[in-house]
Structures are given as C-alpha cells and as structure tokens.
Length: 84
Image (tube, rainbow, N blue to C red; front, side):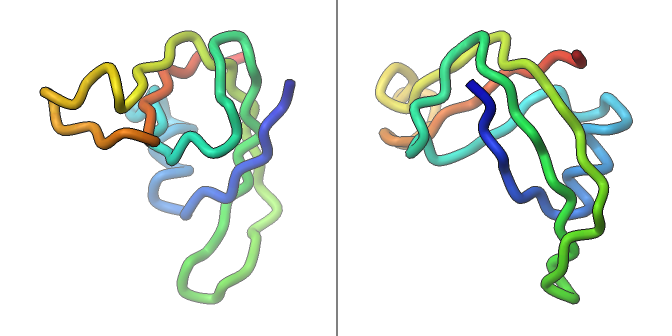
C-alpha cells in the first residue's frame, strides 16, 4: 500500500538528505511496516506543491497508545523510514 503525504519543504529536505529518517503523523491511514510513503514537497508559504517527491518504505511503527509514557499521544505514530 502507498500513502501519499503532503510534506512541508524544510522537513522534506531533511528526509531527502537522510537527516530525518522518520515521520511523526496522525495515524488516520492505518500505516503499517512494509507500506510505502510517497512524500510530496509542499511550500507552506505559497501553499503550493513544488513537484518534488520522495518514496520511502516504512520499516517500523511506534503507536501513541504504546508510548504514552514517552509523550506520544494516542492516535499518533512515529514511522521509521528507509530509502527504496
């Protein structure tokens, strides 16, 4: 399964460079390890897509309900990402 996500430019660039190998998102799409993300760069100032995209594979999911003691709210998740 592929999930298409809007990603603000600064965070998109950090994922592209490898500096940010994770995503923190509301898990309203049923993200699972093995799913793919299609990240679409979005300029939050002009409110437009830049046309740049990245594909990443989800390698790990930390669910909010599992990590409440660590400050992750229920309904949210942290996804470990890998280049494809």
